[in-house]
Amino acid sequence: MPEENGNGNNGKRVGLLERVKAGVKEDVQSLRSDMPAKAKEQIEGLKDPTKTQVYTSIFRHKHDDTPRNRALGVLSNVFLHLHPAKINRDAVRYSYTWGMGGITFYLFIVLTLTGVMLMFYYHPSKVQAFRDVLYLEHDVPFGKLLRNMHRWAAHLMVIAVWLHMFRVFLTGSYKKPREFNWNIGVLLLVFTLLLSFTGYLLPDDQLGFWAVTVGTNMARATPGLGNEGPFGHMLGMTPYNDVRFGLLGGSIVDANALLRSYIWHCIGIPIVASVLMIVHFWRVRKDGGISGPAAVMLASEVKEPKK
Amino acid sequence: MDWRQLWEICSAPDNVPIVGLIPLLIFYIYLAWKQARANDELIGQLETNPAMAKTHHRKSWPFRPGWQKEIHVWPFLLRMEFLVAMIVTIILMVWSITLNAPLEEPANPNLTMNPAKAPWYFLGLQEMLVYFDPWIAGVVMPTLIIVGLMVIPYIDTNPLGSGYYTWKQRKFSIGTFLFGFIILWIAMIIIGTFIRGPGWQWFWPGQTWDHNRLIYEVNRDLPDLFGITSNLGKAIFGGIVVGGFYAVGGFIMHSLFRRYNPKDYKRMSLLQYSIMMFFVLSMVALPAKMLLRLAWHIKYVWITPWFNV
Image (tube, chains in turn cyan, brown):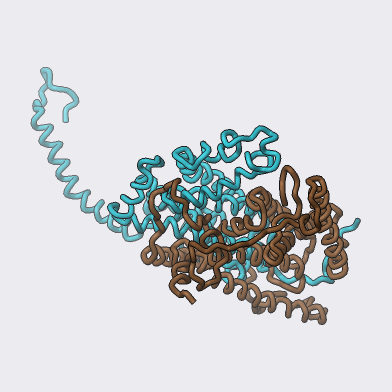
């Protein structure tokens, strides 16, 4: 191809059309010859997808069954890295841990998922709340199943928390150095019960209404802070300014109580409980992993601290 | 025997968890007891045989030379977690398909439910309302339960039994916990769920709930029995009785504890010891007050112008 258009040169003048033609011909030729080669290469590459860039960007290590990869499988995964890479060989025995802490956490996740879905169908107002539950039960596809799962998972979670605490006590797992984590656990137990209790009012039916009435009537008797409690009226407590009023946003269980219940149930307590859970799990690792099953200790081996 | 009434109570959807909790508790107590017994046997052997104690791997589960002491979390723990999650999901699915969550009529402040019951996990507290005024049963007791649970690790100075099931090494602490958890918490919930009917009256399982039943019960106060009539006299008398309960009870506890738990007694500081005493005696106060009420119809022990106990 000449460098310039001929201006008085002897060379044959090459028209634009010819040049385009030649280019297209070349392109077609390259399609014919390169593409099949590339396609072949592509298919060869796909035979081992673990070598693709997409795969290696997600999974940072190989998956052959080597000790290193088993450890990396846990350590390089954000969801699994709360676990150590290796544990006491007896720690996986169900008879020791009963799996109750894990079950509690799993149920919390189930409750969060079903709870968020329920929130799509629920308005926390006196006019709507009960109708929303009826609508959910009779018209929403799988609505009844959704509500049932949320309810029963909540009850199951309470049971699992109790059994978890029971197991931790029986194995002496609160002893040094795990004292603080036991305390976090006690707080989580309280918040689990409060979560369940605040959810009780939300269907706005007789069951929830009277359960919450009975429950919050106790607050009226708080010493010093309730209008019927010891020393309450001395400190100026009336039904309109005491601790029960603060809980319900009124002197009776009504629209404000429903809204407060809803906000504590869906936002307030879950956030606090989640923070405590993070601390709880973190401390399990920092305090040396789960407590056992440890080697038994004999009374003769106890080192008495010097006084 | 009213089987229908019994069935109605047991099959009320919100009572099903507590019906399920009973066999679960029995199973897990059995599981713990089995392991505690095996460990206690091993401890006994090792204590009598110091040579064995030096070489033994010190668990009741088998361990052979050549076995690794630690195993990988992936896959050995994760497969367990996955399995447990699947089993829980299946149980939850079956439960949710077969049993509907309760939904009563719309909330109506003018129509009182009878009996008006709290959720089942708070029925222990509601049952306590029979024996104590709301400020104790509803506020002080729950606070004491929470604080009491929280101080446990700081007052239990026994270094034995950390990380394994045992009974012989921790008789006092396990006994106290079982008393608190099984008798004072679970048993009270069971009473609240299955026994208490309309008007919060006592109906034996299988007895028909009679909404019109009236019980003519004359409750007395303890000072009345002693012929004390003046307000000041009642206040002083009650203070002495309640103070006496803690003093005499504390003395009995002290003489038992230092005899049967000499090592713990020696290890504990004054603060630890008095905190433990206070909580143990407060735990005993509940059944003591229940006995006074159920056996002698005594309502209050201590009457003051500001509060009654």
